[in-house]
Length: 450
Ligand code: PHE
Image (tube, rainbow, N blue to C red; front, side, top):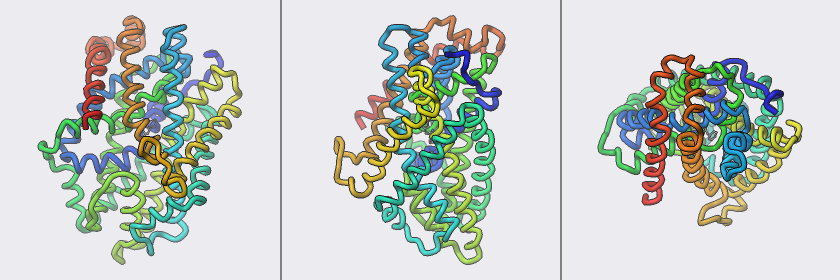
């Protein structure tokens, strides 16, 4: 099957695609709050260390499996460990991103509605309660969810090169420009300095074990780890691409975007004298309220910034959702012999249905609970607290203990051609084989006890 496979056109395109998967709602609605409430600059330092020493080995493991096999997650396991139970890991990592896609596209849908609202009427009359009223109506969020999923499907249907690569090549630079514009605006608001202080003032006393465990969870989610997206995208990487450099590049873009998002959001929140919070509330309640109630001289600008802001969220969410979609599409096309069109349609039906249930769990289905959680929260917790770290653990164990060391070296050093990668291979391998599995286990246990 590999012969008819598409590849990303260049290493830059591959990094942009992986950064596109990584940069998403996680950077915008969780990171800024996590930084502020867990020790500011102290948290950023810990997050950076965790990203380099823990998330990067996981990211590299997925990249090694994907690039060496040029296969979807299931096919990759079958190639490297034929006839073993590892194929179940391949299957699991097809299901997990589709569960994430289901609820992620509900939030993507909300962003579309808020973008539309910013364009059509602005948020002049809004109160922070607008959002609760919006998501509990059954129809409008369902229509927006359908629209978001259809946009995602359309891009994936167009193929790896003409769909995914093209969209990322345009969107990623655009995203950085947009978020920088919003940051400049936000920092220039009167009273913004408190927000800047909230993000940078180090407070080491807040770095508790559970804060560190949650930083790790944030890093997994933000870098799209353990659910096969990085593996699948890497399978489209050319053989001469530098795996280490791509991994560093992806992690660096993701962190940079998260930091800029923090400086785009928190100064505005503090300028409006509002207590910051995390999650949907931050971007769908607090910010529309701020945009709508800007003091008169800023009002017109507030409207423009709100359009740019929700456009940023829609585009950032799309570059992530296409990566989740592609994991399943690659599997169905390569292993089940389906046409791309059919594969995309099948995934659309499945994720639309689960997503619809997630969407309705804010309204008519709010009384329906799975293990004490609404359907939306259940899908979120199952994937972010469990499946992502579980998948990451299995990937590092696979590369560190099951794959031949020579194959791993071959991939990281491109057969010895990459001098720097050859020099540090021993360290990288040590982290993949020993440090990452132990650290993931420790974090898992801390989360269970918390
Ligand atoms: N990394 C994405 C974000 O920060 C979410 C994501 C998770 C994307 C898993 C792909 C796979 O929003």
